[in-house]
Length: 328
Image 1: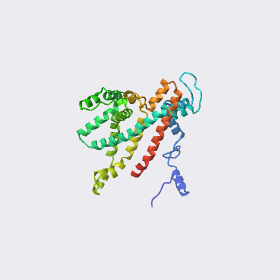
Image 2: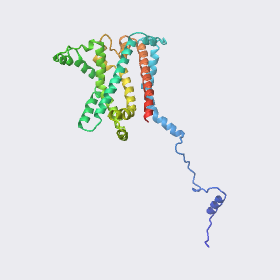
Image 3: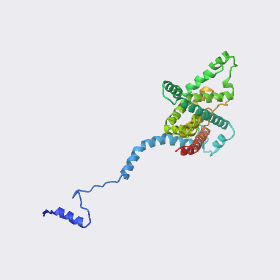
């Protein structure tokens, strides 16, 4: 038989166990509160606010405040000198009515639609051609991406020199026996030159996004299509292209936004000629603000352009979301 020494502490613990209560493991030491994972205390919330307020202040000062000031000025007849006077929606009615701004908006939308289609088709073709390993593929990617990093104003002046009536294009055409082209005297050719030069500058960026999408396509899907007897076109149409839905969405949205705010390149390339037929929306806004002395009207035109860009981007994203959902 074993004898047990029962101290007061063990006796107390035994009594606590028999009564159904758990004994204190720490004795007389103060109990520490243990917060569950995921719970937030006021100190945590204060810390998050303290860490985020510098970014919030910068965003408010350089994004929200200018936007609010622009909307306010769009409701006034401010001329840049005299005190502003509220006139309601007169500036919006003038901007959206028949006139120079609406014609420039039509030209800009035409350039944007044609440019986005051509730019995405060319970028996808280049991505398919350069989606391989090897020195020539790497060199090709670098060469096509190089114009992306060049300033738009420099690109505009460069191509203006090449496409001018006395430029390199007509020199080559004359040597080949063709009649010279006066590109900047024809509205159709001038608009085409804007699309062409913008394509030359941005196709490398579009190509890179499509290359990323192509390299993310699982090889098992291609192999399964080949096992099922699909040829290259059928594999691309039914396997690869649906997987590129996110890349298509990004390229279309960025392309639309880029074309709608064209300014520097057009200034250097055509300067809105001939007779204002290539004057884009942003050019018209700058002209109303600084040349015609109507900053209030220019602010209204800027708000219209911003809303139009947001609406078109939202529509594109909603439309493309169905394709992306079907892929997932």
